[in-house]
Image 1 (cartoon, rainbow, N blue to C red):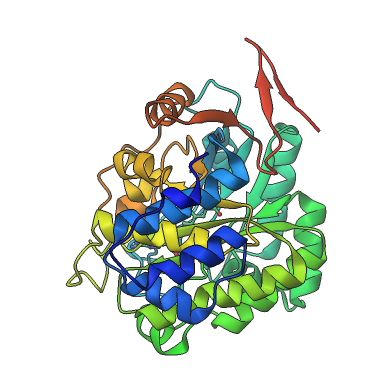
Image 2: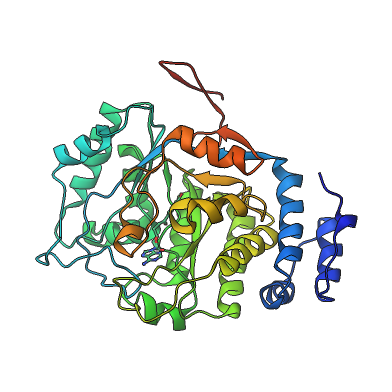
Length: 376
Ligand code: V47
């Protein structure tokens, strides 16, 4: 591993931060703001890579997963989103249960270890549909981990079923949910949420739902949507709130920064993020979230090329084979909709890192020709 003494920067603000990083000391909100305002992208990357290698060496985790989006019908009409549709709008769809099971099994011959299941807030689908979906997937694919429903969906299902959030989570867990994805967090600051996703639960409710999930033994991820109308203070506030909840529960597995894709959204006039902004966000996430084991580079969002560089800027995880991504592609992403296992391994190796296939709970997966084994 590179020594922190090799660090060189023309930015005097990075020197005291470097000393804290070397000593393993927690960074403050003020430090985080200085990082956002620094122009020394290589200095930032160096520091984040130092922490990444201290935690994981050259290992880079990836998994073989499949996204299933059972419906794009959504009452929320978030300005940030190009995926959701009103019920009768052109392009609206809702899978019958058999269609969802078919989507789960189709198009992929390699052993998938995770289904990532998220969708719109459908005004009519009964809670039972989701319980049957989970139970049906578990019955058909007992080995596959179900990472299903964002905090936003859980809160909406609870409201529709007239149940508490805790009871809703218990029923989802009993039906087959193994963990929760990190979506829907966006930016917690109310001012920003009003503009980008007015009808979603607020930031505090997202955090409260995550806390309950963790208390019930369900791990989750966390995300942050950046590159729209938020400012540096909003991003720091978001990261600090996640860090505080992680201190409390330890239930977050990975943090995934998500760059806003404006095409086909109501915020189409906003510019796209640049590679520098994306890499800076990965690096600052690694440096600030000292209690998160993993920082995920979501290649679908970053592009495979930037994702490779992110593996030297703090990220240790490259999500995933995916297959048929919809949310980003509706918003103009031009990346492939999926990559095969071998393609991901190649990307990681070409970045000079060591690929480690994992399951959703970060246990190593070993494969022979016909079967998959998860080490426990
Ligand atoms: O919650 C929606 C975001 C999220 C747009 O947990 C958009 O492992 C950019 O959460 N431009 C869904 N972003 C994706 C997500 C995710 C992805 C990969 C892994 C995991 C995980 C979670 O995508 C939404 C929202 O924050 N989003 N629309 C858009 N136009």
